[in-house]
Length: 189
Ligand SMILES: [Zn+2]
Image 1 (cartoon, helix red, strand yellow):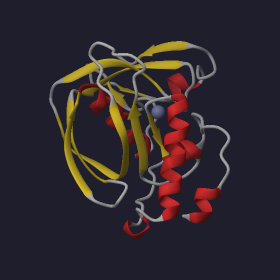
Image 2 (cartoon, rainbow, N blue to C red; image 1 turned 90 degrees about the horizontal axis):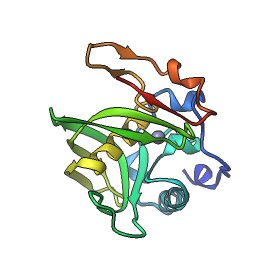
Image 3 (cartoon, protein in one colour; image 1 turned 30 degrees about the horizontal axis):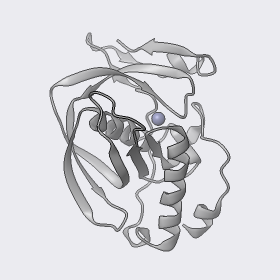
Image 4 (cartoon, rainbow, N blue to C red; image 1 turned 120 degrees about the horizontal axis):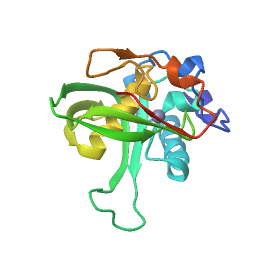
């Protein structure tokens, strides 16, 4: 962990990098909360503040089940609530609401492409926090979308890969990979 935490990372891993397309590994419980772990999560939050609202460890080259989420608003935005810095280790979604909502998502691993993805409006998630404490929560709306996006990353899925459309068709990530360098919008259903 300490060696990993010191590794210099200059940019986010991008679509096509194998590390993004396979499941990450569980973080050993005895590493959580240790100085190297805290240093790494601080670094991830720092990267995130400059760029987005969620970051998974494999987006900075580390194949581990760790993600950070934070939503900070400079001014109030209707329908959005701030999310405090949240460290999510070894998460599992244990319940998905049947009610799904479509929404546009961007991803630091697929710059300038936005994806329209149906996600459960609320989920029940279990994870370990920055101190290794087990947290069970139900999250809703935008926060539920961010959790699902980041947990997809930890399971090796990027930008809604393998999203099943209304007619049961599985949409392959290959369709969108070619467009990653150009600004575009991809509606997956
Ligand atoms: Zn992403």
